[in-house]
Length: 286
Image 1 (cartoon, helix red, strand yellow):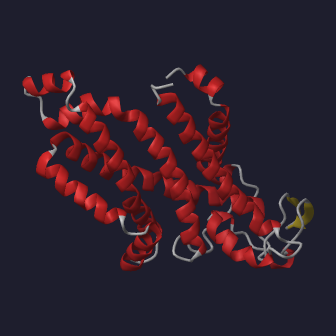
Image 2: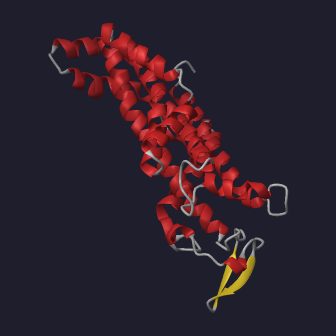
């Protein structure tokens, strides 16, 4: 895949990629870029609650501008949104990594081995596939308690099935090729054959499903935080920021709920565009 041709032929994917990079940079930068550099952007000034965007006030003898206004606790809303990106992206990143590790191993093993191994793994995939994602996430978080690592694991354990199905299908088609048969004839280990020789030839669809899973993970994390199962206040997450302010949607303060919701939607859309771009790039029929 040529990078320049990818940009030229996939403009929406390029825009999505740039938007994702911007927010990854903001998330990684942490407090350095935030107007409020306090932990979790949680510097509260109750007397300055619900200020309009662009309001400049004096705080401890220094002039401070609330570019996006303040929330009901007088916290800088822009800083809260910037801090919330770290939670949303880190949860999505770790969850996708977990799903890739489990999905790659089970899918490759089933597709390469075939026979009874494939039958058992396929049956397990079908069982897990029938369970609604949100129901499984809630069950896992309730069983192991509420917290960051539980959210990471819960989302990751619900997303590996699609990865495994894609990898299994790719390996079933690859295992009959000559270079795989040659590797078996040379006595190479199954692990080396699968992950050194076969996996690079199956990366295209895997990258596509990983991008789609990123979008899904961000949406699931936001939903869990909104329900109070994910990130816990005062730790900012776009989902719990919406939860704090959704009752203001019908007032003049609607932006406090609309902006985090728009950021969730924009990142989901950006990853969707990236996935579509990669799908087009790896589609050999075009």
